[in-house]
Image 1 (cartoon, rainbow, N blue to C red):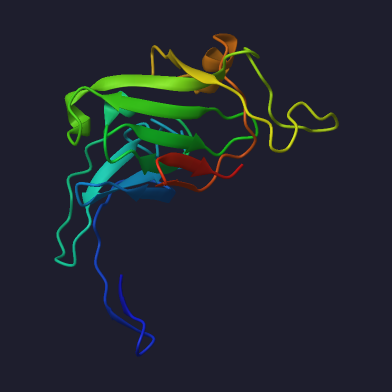
Image 2 (tube, helix red, strand yellow):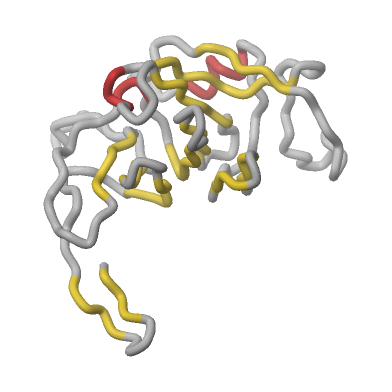
Amino acid sequence: ILYDPATGQVVRRFLSLAGTLRNCAGGPTPWNSWITCEESVVGPTDTFARAHGWAFEVPASAEPWLASPRPIEGMGRFYREAVAVDPTSGVVYQTEDRDDGLLYRFVPDVPGDLHAGGRQQALVARERSGLDTRNWGVARVDVGSEMSVAWVDLEDIDSPADDLRHRGFERGAARFARGEGMWYGNESVYFAC
């Protein structure tokens, strides 16, 4: 949607992608595109020909065109909410909007070309493997506390059983409740959960 803030009017609107399901926040890339995220892991079923839960890259341009609905398979399949891209390395950080989600990152083989493959990883608190950060009923993480982190490689990231977050947690990844918005700034990644 092209919106004119001076007049408060929509100037024009157009589709950038079709064939996806429940697209959520996503985020911009430093190479002038947008990564849109499917917040669903449904299918394939009688209703849906393909599995959903992927990330897709669309052009961030005022000139309309419909992008090819080609999932970035190397970024895995899960209930994805938002992304933030490190402009120096091209690493894509990702939140998962589940009560027991993980914080992921995709380390591309070729920065700026996400379809060229890479490694999908999950965040691990170094000193507290398998940390449950959810503070539900009991404080597990003090506000303002600092922790060193590492990243664990994930396998079978197409996750047909929708169990990527469970397998990552078993490998020591930290668990977060309802990963939402995410942004890169000041050489850091910020996210809400």
